[in-house]
Length: 379
Image (cartoon, rainbow, N blue to C red; front, side, top):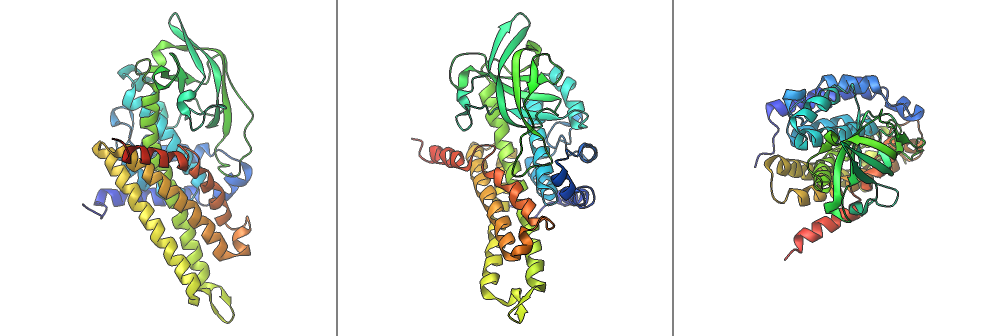
């Protein structure tokens, strides 16, 4: 058991922190206020390997470990959580193609995804199926050398902007075994998008409904065999849960630092806020819980790297702990700053808004508890 980062991991972390400080943090407020999808910054991140973090290097990926990826995403999220979360989703979709696609699919799609010349979205959730993902209704009917898709996907990050949509669709009967995974490209006739959603947070990434109306998708775009889609989607989500947890930790760590600075300079009742024991206890608890969440993320990431048989449970544990802790720490930091924290001139309120959705996406934290309990109580 080794708790210290390797020299290479420290270098990766430093690279991500430097990019976050110079290319994300100065612009994050403007991206948030203007709902700007920062294409130029994302493509610059891709030059550092951040668009194919654990994609194999023969197609342009960085071929890093899941733990390495968690270090990168924590650092990026400490500057702009919304943008870091999109990078996480893009990486999840790219990895699914890398891990489960054939040689032709990998060579066709991944070089452009690893440079972010093309952007990717993950499409599982539907208007009528969120937590009950296996009940999805989008139907793909085989017709010659193509599938004809009809249905819709909801709350899709990158919707309307992404070039590649990794979609779970129903090719067979009811339940998980009837689901397959198809790559749908933006230019296909029959693919359309709903209006851009107005959200509490995550303003730097577009979110829209993705709709299929007699949309023809070549059979060559199917990832894996028919019926493999749900398994592929869940494998993707294991990594996505670690990544979004890392994003929560990054946001929380930044807010902890801002709260600490405030306690050391703000005076009330004739003394610094840092002199009040109640506030000392609060910041001590925040720091302890953030560190515990970070260690749980590292544990789950290491389990994924090792192919551990309990990796799915550990990823659920890490996601539940880190996203709850992340939001609570950001919210506590806002409370410590009082009225200043509530102003949009200060970054803490943005971190509060951006981390709230982490408790919902990649599987709600209630579903994380279901996954954990199911594993613990299996006979």
